[in-house]
Length: 462
Image (cartoon, rainbow, N blue to C red):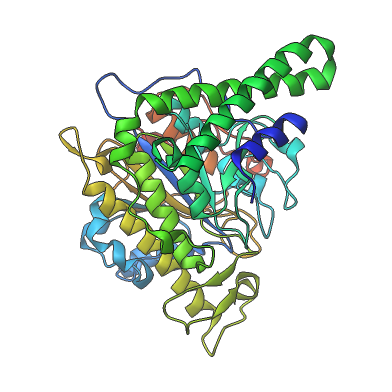
């Protein structure tokens, strides 16, 4: 397992590939108002558009949905698909968005969260293709917090601090917590009474001071790429030290919001489902404590051996790649098993919404100021081409996204009025104070249809 000290040292001695990222220069949280919080939940293996279609569509609505024509249906009088039914009580806070595309960045099996950056990294994740910070990081910078952005991922048997999927800037990947114990320890150890933990914090501080002195001494002795590396190292060290000062300032709030987890929740032998449940608890508590206002929750990758699905026998291990190739499991079809996984994801989403709705804040609850989205990181199916990128969003009344309570199908690929994920993210950023004209790279194939790709989705602007 890699400790934070190991991580800091590997950053300094390596290529400076991981950075915490400096604060953005855009609008900050409005004075006297709670920050808006963002949780991006992503899955592998695609999210097929027909799986989100409402079973109660009228004949005309079903025809429009099938033809990928523009459609807007009020969710209040509609039944949700069975796998979404756990969200039924939250329909007024929900939006199902269909028709967005990201063909220009699609990579087949996996885009490595390029869908959040709207740049193409490739299935093998080429660092040189990372062009700017991913949207989850940019949104977090609009509402500053000690950690700015927290990333957790359920990928195979990884543990400790690992390479993240989000990007904090050009040529700069984030880091991620690969198991709940590490996430819990790193986020909440500042208020720990454990002597070993306190000694570790003190040792970390000494390491940071030493590295800061070392980088300052050597900065003028290097040129070119080595100077760029040294600059990043110095920035990272400075960011960590600044973050620690901010954490100390809110220690009372952190102490009141330690996650309700026990040793079993943090054990090393957790199933995939248990791991994700523990991650969800840690993320909710981190936001309640004010440690972060933005998180990426990578639910799984194609390499994640899925265990703990309640509809299957104990000990079952699912191969997600096989499911993507229509191979069933234990007498159940691939479609059935895929639905079980999505049901579990919706339950995680519902649990987090319930937790935020039960937490008072201002004149309402924390959920009033929270946005949770769910999407497949690679697009519409197992071998995605990015033609469609369905999204489920649950958001509170202050989220400033003018589509809640509706099933919205935007015009399909090539149709006039078609929109991309870049338009969707531009809308989010514009609604929260970042005046960027367009976020993400354009899709050159859309030019043949004469489609204006730039800017936000205007009907969604608050």
